[in-house]
Amino acid sequence: MPRKKAETTTENPEIVESVDDGNGIYDGYPFSENPVPESLADTSDDLGDVSAEGFDESDYGDDAEPNNDNVVEKPDAVPERPARPSMQRRQQQASAPVLTLEVGGEVVTQKDKDDAIWHEMKNSQVSGTHLTGRLGKVERLENGGLISIVDYKGQRVAIPLKEMMLDVSRPAGQGDDEYNERVARVLNRMMGAEIDFVVRGITGRGEERAAVASRKAAMLRLRRRYYLTNSSNGKPQVHPDRIVEARIVAVSQLAIRVEIFGVETPIRNRDITWCYIGDCRDEYFVGDAVQARVKSVEGDTPETLSVRADIRSLTEDDTREKLLALKPQTNCMGKVTDVSGGIVFINLVDGIRVLAHKCFDRRKPGRGDDVLFVCTRTDEDSNIAVGIISRIVKRNI
Image (cartoon, rainbow, N blue to C red; front, side, top):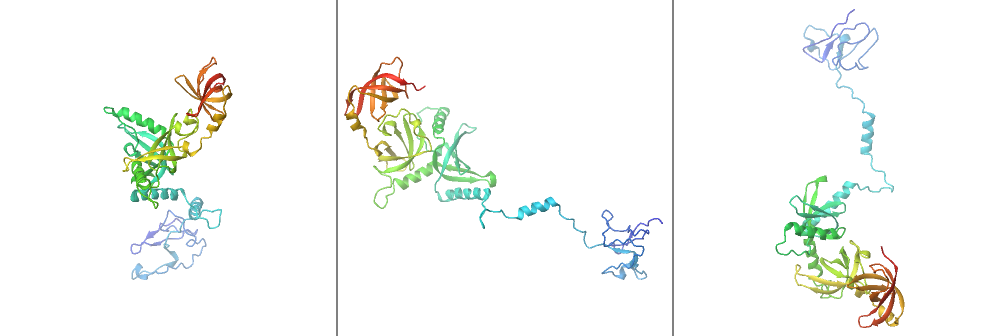
């Protein structure tokens, strides 16, 4: 017997009529693209009584009699498909907390750390407090200007050149390009130094956040606090003869440049130690901290303050007794620290400073050479010894 196509009644489109083809399959299931639910399929020859809950006889008309044997009710909702295993795993991983090593331990994500850092910078912008970062890069803008990039706990902070408060004089008539080259050399020597700054602005959100800061504002704030504000003893915290801790911001061959609570000042090699120093770069490095004694403080406004300091006065000069014990014609090993104007500056192994005017070796002495020195006389007023170089023991190549 051929199948009879199901017809949907116009009064109730959800009720369809179907004729059993003898195999117990309903052709009239309203969702023909979906399989027939097991609850609605009956493969037996006798279909039995299929009731429709909520069925109203008026839907068939006055003379019609419902045939419950051949009526199928559309289910209230399509059966939900089970979630895919991969989706279930992702949901479980997202909902499961991080398993910590300690019971009840708190987990701090990288996002939480970044938000805390930016909160600190926002507080600096609002309250004017200074933060400390490390100078890590110098960038040149399209217009030829320079900006300094400071790393603050992994976040980038930009400081314009005019806010760096560098002590670089500009002669009259000097062009911008030449001046920027000089400033770039100064900043390159400062690379890696710790500097203070005050955040002036924050733009963007999320990963696109950027901060602009001012080192000048931080230095002026430190000057007012430590140099121009008296403490309980009636003196400012930084005053002459006070021992302070200073940051090394630049190092050259003959001097180091330090920052003492907002004021930068150079310290020459002769003010660093009682001995000769041939190259300060061999012993001092940018980013380190040293103790220094403040010799003088000048200026009564934050913009005009200047400081002189030295490191040598922190230690006693014990070479005078050794110098008095040094007799003429004594041979001593020493290291050449510098050669200038035909005079060789030497540090002996016991720390005595000596000058040599002659060298009897066929080779010329150079900085770092190990030489054999012969004392001819001592100068107690200058606290040095004078003599000659008999030979060069080892060259510093």
